[in-house]
Length: 183
Image (cartoon, rainbow, N blue to C red; front, side, top):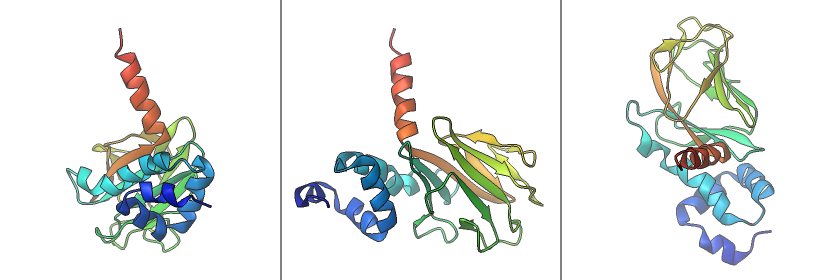
């Protein structure tokens, strides 16, 4: 159980998000224990993802704690925040069984998949869609996984989506970038 003082230390936005996503909250507490500053470090970028959009109003925010990975998106409606189940892979397409379901006739029933490999990061695979998947303007060959990174532009047919990464892997990358810049 969480200490009331630790809960009070979280900002209201984070508390609201956590209360709306109890399964995710349970997993974050399992990963981080009572270290609420780490939970907030994971959740704040999720809540700020819409502000990062520059090219499209749609985004997919991939989040990893090192052990747990999930996606947060404003698809399909562009407004509400939707959290996927934790997994190592998520299907995207028109089919209602997809983790991210897109009701657009140009999107295949099973269009693409985003996956996660701990320690390696996130990747995307076109699963044989009719109208193709692109990353930063380059069309993907079907069934060939391609790494994706923070800031990449994903296109499913004509639908443009910005991809962001938050969490453990992005913190390690930031540390490595800072460390490699030291002479």
